[in-house]
Amino acid sequence: MSIGLLAMVVLLVIAIGAYRGPGPEFGPAPPGPAAAPPIPERASSAGREAASPPAPAVPGLSPRKTDPPSGAGTASPKPSSSPASEAPPVASAPPRSSAPPSAKPAPFEARYQVMNTFQGGFIAEVLIRNTARSDQGWVARVEYSGGRVVTAWLEGVPQGTFSGRRGTLTYRSGPDLAAGATVALRFHIEFADPSPVSCAVSGRACSRR
Image 1 (cartoon, helix red, strand yellow):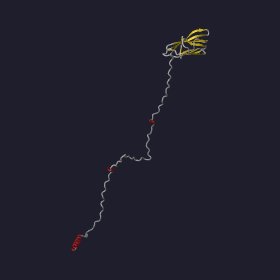
Image 2: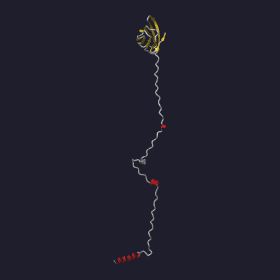
Image 3: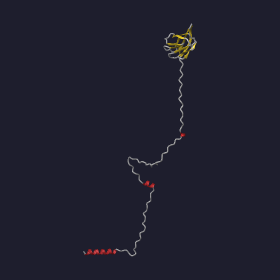
Image 4: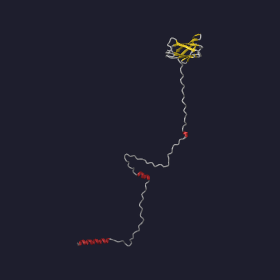
């Protein structure tokens, strides 16, 4: 036990000797200004944008571009229509009315002649020929300045119908006249000049003998 006590005393002496207080020339230096920490250089906005990593894309969504809002009072300009650029309306010509086709002359040849004369009257004839290539019906009309139609008939063929009024004879054929055939229409007229005012077959004038 005395050895442990002795060792403690020795250690205490060594610790006291090792401790030295500050000398008379000891004076703490006043604190100087603290050195400012270095300011890191600000990276340009272009560098920051280039350095910043792109935002991760979300599957199924495409990135959208956000347009800056347009001014509230700004209206989009409308294209102005210039009166000079518009073509003037062209007046359309009125449709031409096509003239009706001229009617073809009737395919008949007719010849008028007086067959016999007597007191107060005469017998006349209209010889009719069909010049067409097909059978044709016909209508004969003989007009006098006066007188009276007594009767009318066809020579050697079926009869047609006739009417007489104030010296005008109208005769309609019965059966059609065959192509190239000829028929004689004869009639009895009273109290009239043997020279008729007009004579025609289906609109075609008769020749006179």
